[in-house]
Structures are given as structure tokens and as C-alpha cells.
Image (cartoon, rainbow, N blue to C red; front, side, top):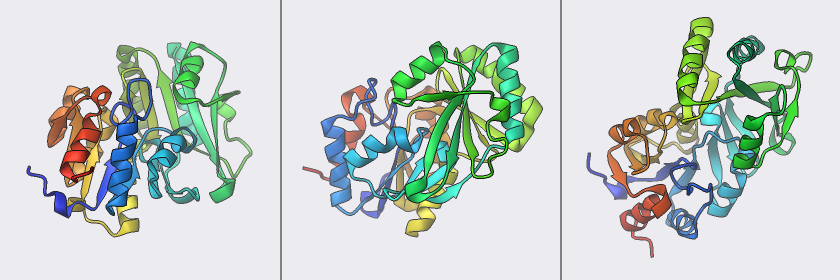
Length: 282
């Protein structure tokens, strides 16, 4: 498919592995390219598996305001006000089932519990106990954990809701756990990998594509007016949904196959270079 850049009105951009380097840093070139797109009147829609808190420094550095897609589509927030535009929750029964699987398979499992809205919006990352996985996740995201029984994660608190659970282990073990989750919960949940060591559990039908639809509805955008960028399995739905799609050279083969174009790797500012050329940024 040929890109008609003059018809593009918005950019849906994944963070990790796409516009961020392997060190999870946003380069100056990437920041300037995305900021330049905003200056030219394009909407930049963050579409990430990260929570709001973990993604906020990147969003602020880019200067992207308006709808942003978090938790792989489980929440769409209007930023920087943090007002909820859409949310999809994972019920306590599903959390407890996944926690039971994690114990039986000796695999790490954690959940994100949210409360409030707007200025009162908060996110809490919960695991049952500290581990090598929690330490690595804290280093990757800058987030802290609370610890407690996941079977009681939301018990007795009407205002709390879970938007995502995460299993962390080697990819082969995650694929087994993925099968077990769907055997027990069926279509009540959706699962996807966002890295070769992360398996995410969301409400049924939730993807980045569903989150992007919410952002598009807010702006009144059509599919052909969106260009999407991503590198992992959790991005495929969004890439297929957008009018035009781009994957960096470091993306999984299945993601590259789903994209209309493959550009340079994230470590070489491939997305930023593409934006500079496509939208004639100085």
C-alpha cells in the first residue's frame, strides 16, 4: 500500500521497542520528530502497554495532549488531565484464576489496580511477594510494588478495579500459561505478549486497536487518516486497523509481515528518520 502523507491527520505510536531505544530512552531525534509532527498539526496518540505513570515522562517530553491509550487498550485517558475516556476491567474471578495458575506453575504474576479519575486517578502495581521479576520490572518501568494476596486484590473496595495482569517468565513457559488461562477463562479475557518475557491478561476483546478507536472517535478521525507504528505482538491489531502501518527493523517477523513498511531499527531512530522524511520535518 502506498502512503498518502497529505491525508494523514494522526500518528498512533507505540513506545518500547518502537520509538524508545533498547535502554527505554527517548532520543532527542525522536522527541524532535514527534514534536515536529505536532507542530505541523498532526495528532500524536501514545498507544502503549505501559500504565499512565510509567509512560508520562515520554508523553510530556513529546508534548502529546489529548487521548492516550494505555495498558494495551484497557484504558484511554485524556492527557494531561487524566480524565477517563474509556476503560475495560478484568474481574476478581479472572485475577484469582490467574493467580492460582501462577502458583501452580511457579511463575510470577502481577496486576494493576486503578482508582479514581482526573486529578484523583491513581494506579497501584500489586504482586504477592518480592522476586527477581518484581525487581526487573521496577528497573524497566520505574514503578514500585505493593504486596498482598491477589485473591483479595479488590475485595471490599468498590472504587478499585483491575485493568491488566502480567505473567513474567521465559517465552516457552508463557505460551503454556497462555493456553491454561484460555482453557479456564475462555473469551472472558484476551492475552498477548508485549515482550518475549511478558504475557498480558486483559478484558476480552481489548487490544490497542480498540483503544485507538476510542481516540479516533474523540477526534472524529477516519481509519485512512491514521498511521500506526509498533514492534510487538500486542501491536499487530493496531497496525492492521490503521490506514497505514510501519514497523521498525527490530520488530518480530510477524509484526513486520503485518506492517505496510519496515523502517530502520529503534536503536537507529528508524521511526524518527521516517517521520522526518515523510512529513518534511527540518
